[in-house]
Image (cartoon, rainbow over all chains, first blue to last red; front, side, top):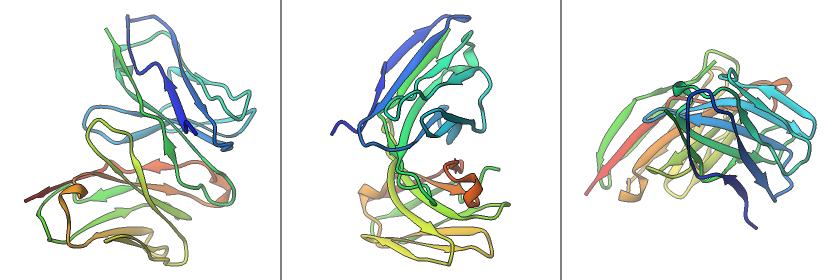
Length: 114
Length: 112
């Protein structure tokens, strides 16, 4: 099992450019998440999804969009990149139910906006 | 609402004990604990559910006090490998199932 796979691992963007961070999981988890982590800081929830076709905003959704058309994939779209979006982005997944289960994290995508 | 962790940082010698606290202003249904090494992704330690459950993981255990809306992580006889940043993640009532908000983290450094 590959677990949670994120691509790309590193990316440099210019201000105003757009891009999509890809995330896929092969554990048949129905819950998926996107977090961002600024240097020396904690994890901030951007968006999450409890199943295909269902997404919801987290703490810091502005400037981002997501979609969940399949159980496996949960891409994160950055529109009009800004320096404030320079961060490490983690995708995670978990089994879902009455209680959120253990989160399995991808290796992270390091994004720099110049 | 982001949970608040304390202390922000701890420095220990090998073999010493530490306690990390996690408090929320909202009612809690579950608490997760994760450890993150520098440059790596967070790694799951344990989940606690409402009801004051206490779980253990090797020499790391935790408690969950639903009334006080807080959880504590206990690290006993710390080892060098325990160094890293510890995060608690909190989930609200079942209606908020899925949403997991993390605290700001507690950095633990274990010295020989």
